[in-house]
Length: 412
Image 1 (tube, rainbow, N blue to C red):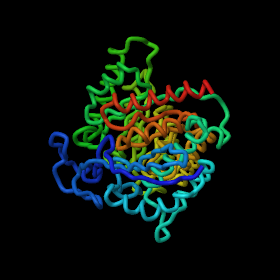
Image 2 (cartoon, rainbow, N blue to C red; image 1 turned 180 degrees about the horizontal axis):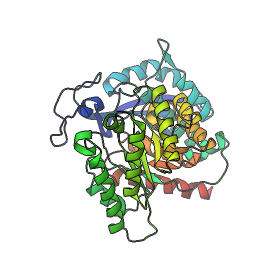
Image 3 (cartoon, one colour; image 1 turned 90 degrees about the horizontal axis):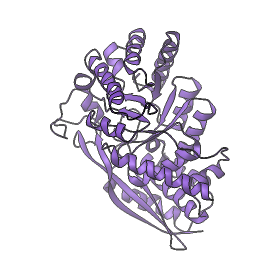
Image 4 (cartoon, helix red, strand yellow; image 1 turned 135 degrees about the horizontal axis):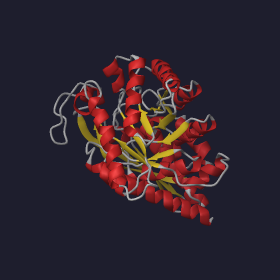
């Protein structure tokens, strides 16, 4: 079936763009804002509204497939593409992408995704957000044409074995690190609280003491509020490389500290996302690999999750091959075309490294629903509740899409 037209519309995402480098320098919040000067290229404010572009592909039978171009909350750092603003990129899509799609006959998702991934402007790939959004609409189109769920399309094209099952969902609190934990416990969310621990002085502590208090509080809160001993969530805290700064990358000190956190989290499994930041991909792999080995030597079972400096399919394969981490947060907007997210998840699974189908709070309902289908198809070990930081909205979107997909797939 042919594509007869492509429409584009600007939109907002479920959260905001944050200049992480400026925030790390110790900026204090004023209400929901961060007064101060941005330091990352293209930011006009330290916190500014996230933007999206909806790509609506019109098929010759009149059906419309939709995907949303978005990028992550912390754009422009850690090897990621720059800030994504609708007014800047709608003209680029209109000039360089739409003409290549209109009149094209849709074949398989995989073939079409590679086609989009390989579009070049001045010998450079399209912004990751464009590749992400356009391939979402392609996957949606194939699903409409074949009258199958998107998860079924992926399973068949990638020859994935096994039955679809519910994927554990990870939610994030945003700055409401206490009230939102209560919400997560009431809804028995599988993995929590993520925590938005992006400021050492305010949220982690000069020596990590505030994080220790928070880990203990989360554990105690679960034990107090849960209505069944069968509810045993995993605890996941994202510290944005803070332990590198606190302990000056002294691995033995970091290992000792993580051992203390593990005891405070007991009886729940503990994961730390981006515990350290090496400042480059190769250094990050080297430090995380050393840290992981040291943790095992000391019989500490805290799992390490990669995020920063692990942005492309090539990056993910390197982290996995070096066994530098226990799990990779596959941040789907960073990977561009959706086939990269699929291949990354399958590569992690094949090599027995945890596969977290992640993304960003700064996505949309459309992108969240589509990546939930990918998580189901690939048998991910964890799936992110997104977008937003309110817990309820993002969890609802992902949880409900997961159950709809499982119900429809089981009926086919």
